[in-house]
Amino acid sequence: MSETSVIETMVRENPVASLRAVVAGLSGLDAGNSCEADLIDVIGELETLKCVAESAQATATRGVYAAAVARQEAAGMRGSRVGRGIGHQIALARREPPSRGSAHLGLAREVAALPHLAGLWRQGRITERRVSLILGRIVWLDLDDRRGVDAQLAGDPDRAERLCQMNDWQARGAADALACAADPAGAVRRRAAAEADRHVSSRPAPDTMLRLSALLPVKEGVAVIAALTLAADQARAAGDERSRGQVMADTLVGRVTGRDPVTEPVPVHVDVTVPLDALLPEGSHTGQQPHAFGWVDGYGEVPADLARSLTADAVETLGVFRRLFTDPTTGQLVAMESAARCFPLLLALFLRRRDRYCRNPWCGAPIRHTDHAVSVEEGGPTSADNGQGLCEACNYAKQAPGWRSKTRIDPDGTHVVETTTPTGHVHETRPPPAHPRRE
Image (cartoon, rainbow, N blue to C red; front, side, top):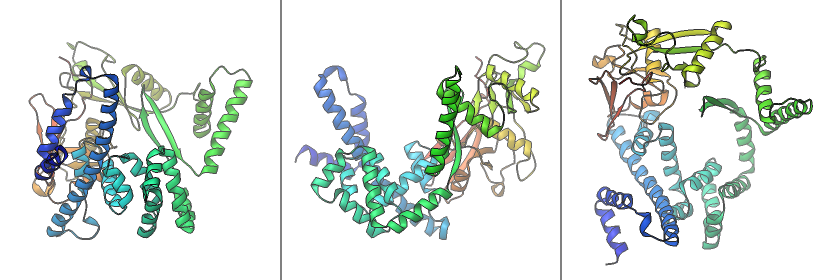
């Protein structure tokens, strides 16, 4: 029996043990024992292995979906509730946010209907990213048209080879062109729908910056860039010492907010966490603590010096300034409790400030719901200990059959949420310290 056949037999008979053996073997790779050419070959083979592994994950994901749907239907779930929480299980297994788990699930199900694309992926010749980019351009077509595009992209060896040699932009463009040719009227409707989805979003960037993004129709987007570029060119021509990028950014802020960002402070909502011992006469710190951190809604944690600056701006501009107090040793916010069924406003605020982001492992989405880890129906109290901040999707997912949550307080005072999935896998999460632990 060949070495390949032996490995195939091992994977078929005990896939988990076989994969763990592969992981253990790869973790022992020693680059010092190989020459440069061999190491390049290793990198190439590992890339192929990575693609094959991604394809195998998609196969396993489809299996999980089929088994989970059968389990949910047997439990009496019907209609749109069927399928709830499955993407979250995939995300937990892949240590990614729930949104990515749902994307992986959708990709795995869609690619199964495209034999040529799926075949190249299974052989390790294209990446999951490449498959995702192509599917994103054709998923709106009906099944027959999607299969037609699949055949035109990779239906014979020559076409498959061309697709494998394309970069991501070329592959996406080729899929887009074939999709538009397959259904021209549908492409027009899709563009109209995309324009209706225009929006603005933001996410934190390094060094306490924030990246502001806008999804706009192409004509509006081009007009915005042209206007900002013109303003920058005029300012620079008049002797402005700021860079073009700085002028464009300041012009954008000025035109949106109606104020000059260089000379006028902005009103902000600042929550500054303060260790409890700062309030005591014998406390080792007074005033603004060296290790105090601020929390800015819509961004997150900011360092002490910026927190002090924003606090001063808040006072000057009649913004909002609130202090929250923490245990100086563990960094955890102090507890609160209520007899109400729903979390009162201040207790809900406490949970949001303690957890910062959705408590589901690897999620990181903004908190939308304050949730009882153990439900009220099961006797769970409305308290900080039994509460957790979740995003909307994670809160709905945990309501599916088989999901369980409970909380505990560790000896050092850290709040722990233990989540058990329908397959019995257990995941624990802890909130980030509100300030660095003090030894």
